[in-house]
Image (cartoon, rainbow over all chains, first blue to last red; front, side):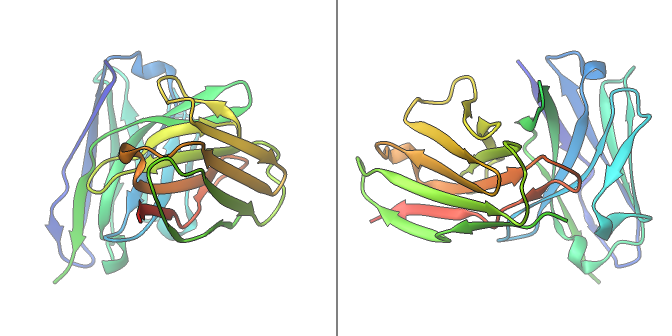
Length: 121
Length: 107
């Protein structure tokens, strides 16, 4: 059974830093692109970043470029999101998602339960 | 960035109703369009990928159509467990973007 379990979400002050983790199991982690997707309270979904299987390619939404870094450790079946210079607008539930590529189709087929990051003084 | 819009933003329907949700992209995205269902407090669930392909395990009452800029998600006969928020998402290019969502609730 595919499982994605996020951790690391806490209350942090504006300007602070935080690292989120996502532990993957039930599939060959090193075979998949992975993404972070966030959802502000009461709002819609926003894709944040993704990373290639070997970590050689990473893409970000403009609002987090230069502040967030996605990384992975295939030996530990883990995905990470280092978040620096946090702002109030980064407050959200952060989901880890498995990227599924079938032919030319790209989607998010498994999601974790999410971890809440609150940025507030 | 590619902007995604959805209509309606919410709708009320009864069990057994046929429901159609529309999604529009700000530019052509071919068939790079996915649909997700999200229930309150839960993670999203993939329903449809590549505009019209049903994800494994998803009931056949869900269907998707469209290409280019205009897409639809149809629920042929609404069931109690289908009351949720539905999001479209383009995977044509990064940043991947989602529509604002359509909330389906009970009439």
